[in-house]
Structure formats: C-alpha cells, structure tokens
Image (cartoon, rainbow over all chains, first blue to last red):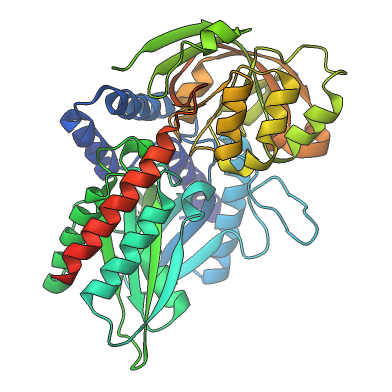
Length: 289
Length: 198
C-alpha cells in the first residue's frame, strides 16, 4: 500500500477512536444500564449511552478531552521511520479535521502547537510479531490519568498486599476518573514496567476477557467484586464502580514487586487498524496482545 | 425522592432554595464557561463585561470548537474536574452573584459554605457526555480572552436549551452528596480490607 493511502486510513482510525466506542465497552455499559434500577443512575447511564449514539451519528468527539494519543504498532513489512512519519502526519491532519482539542503543551515554553504533536508525542510502542501491519490507537484523557498510582511492595508481598494497594488507590480516586471505570493493574520488577503493563491491561484487552493464567484470572474476578463493593458507583452516585479489572504481570525482582494502577474512564477509546497488502480491516480490538 | 426541575436563567434565590442535593435539573438560558485562569480574569473585569453574571450559571468546561463561515461553533463540550477551582470558588460566587456552578467530581468545604451563604448550588453533568451536551448549546453569544487563554480556558458565553441532566450535589443547605460518598467509600474500604485478613 502507498504511504499516502495508509495515512488516510490512520486518520480514519483516529476519527473512529475519538467518535465511537469499542463494541465490548458499549455492550458492557448497556448491560449496566439494563441492570440499574435507581433513577439518578439510570439517568446518567442513559445520558452516557445517548452521548455515544450522538457522537457516532454526527462524528463528534465522545468527550471534549480527546486525550493523549498513543499507538501500539506491529510493523508488518514497513520501516519504522516511515510509519513514524505517517502516524505523526495523520495526527496533525486528524486534529484539524475531526477536530480534536489541542492537547499538547511544550511545558518549558508553554507553547501549544495546536495539532496534538510535540516532544515524544504521539508516543509509539513498536510491538513484536505478526506478519501484517497492525496499528492500535488509544486515546486517554486527563481526568482518568490524574488518578494513576504506583507503589513499590516487597517481593514477598502477596495477594492481600496487592489488593490493598489497588483498593486504596481506587477509593482515593472516588468519582474523579468518571466511573464506571475499567481498571488495570500492572505487576512487575520496575516502575515503568508496572505502569505500562497496567495501561496495556486496561486498553488492549477487551472487557470480559480473563487473563490466561488461572491464578491471575481469579485475582481479576475477586478484585472486580471488591472494587464494586466500595460502592463508588456511577459518577459517585453508587451502583457499579468498575466494568472490569484486568491484571498483567512480568517476572518480579528478588527484592521488589512494583504495582501500577491505571484507570480508564467509562469512555475507553481504542481502535485497531489492520493492513495486509491492500486489504484493510478496522476493528475494536486485536486478538494478539 | 428525587425531584426534577427545569429552570431558566437568570435563576432567582427562591428557585435555588427549592433545589435539594440529589435532585435533577435542566437549565435553559445563559451559562458561561470558566476554569483555572478564567475565574481571575472574570473577577478583575466583571464590571466591564457587556452582560451581568447575576443569576447565571458558571460551567467548568473546556470545549472543542471550530470555525464555520467565520463564526465559532461548539463541536463537543463537557464538564472538567471542578476541584481545581475550589480555591477561588467562594469569592467567585460572592462577587458575581451567580445562581450555581456546574462541573464534575465535586467541590470542597468553602464552596459548600458559599452555596449556603449566597444561595447557590453546585451540580454535575455526566462526565464525558460532550457530544450530547453540545447539542443543548443553541448558540455562542460571545467569547472573551480567547487569544490570551486559548480555546479550552477562554470564557465562552453560551445560550443553552435544557442543559442536563445536572445532578445537584451541593444545595443551599450544606448538603453535599460527595461528602456522603467519601464517608461511604471509606467505611466500605475498611470492611473489604478487613475481609482480606481472614
């Protein structure tokens, strides 16, 4: 495929990411709405669903905070620097076209270029594997990012200490990250790994899918139940607090276990663009992460 | 029981006095966006603005806008985290005579105090419902400090129709739903953590 053509598809993927919700997220919200009986909560959930419908129909961004754009890329046969250029150009074009809110500020100068690019932004992760080009677009807003947390536990820590760390973080966040949230927990040997794994856990795995490791899968189910027992609820008005909890882990260090906690607001925005030859597929999640 | 209200600006004190924490409200008339640096500029220039803020609604928001035929148009607009404005809100409510503040996430004690003292309310719009909320904006009446503050922080003076659903979180009688939330979540957290011990 020609690079100009690919750029058009990346712009389209960004547009879909910002103006629609992945099917798994939408279905999960609908289920929550159908189960809910209290009037205020039904009103709010109903407004959120109506909002998604309006955004999708009219091509308006779901949230005015169109977030920081992050890309997870399997290169297929493409060169890294060429894909980098295409993605940056697509972000600039999408910013004007959709439009997106100008969300990148060069902080020493306080200058905002107005096109959602800047130093190290958009952030691109180069992934291994796969014969085809696959670009996952994720947009995360400031409200849910404000409640991310990180804690270094001793390596001997177990389920109880991990749960306590996560539950305290969620309780402290309260209504701020626009619940019902989708919660990610990353466990690893270092701080950046813990947070990155937490973010991948939230954004790359669809709602409802459990970890392939049985122990971790069980922890996800227990944590989901406990987070919902906190009863923060829909925008802080009680009821369902989290649509799902995903845990991802890496081997830890003999002396430390780092736990990262990342939340997405209810409006989890993710789109996958898959290109093999001239054939293009746009879907809500990849099966290979 | 949850009450539902539809009010038009300017909103009088007697209407504010009928609102209770937990009620649902829809607003028609004039609101203006204000956040972070905007509040200070409004306070410094409130007598120079071409309209009175009395009885209007302050909206903690940062919109996405676009130019269409040389006129601005709101694409998406939704509430931003209100607590960042807690430091200035008491003075802002006192000095402007606004009837209420809308945003998301809740406010602190000084705002609860201001709502009681000056008969105002604080309410929240569904966070992230920016496409839907944009539909209730009928037109942009004016924009102030656009060059100085940029799009998200500029003061956008808007005409709205049935903006909502707004849930009243703080009423004029010191009720604060999010204070109840913090208490409830704190208790639940202790209970859940205790169950981990067993």
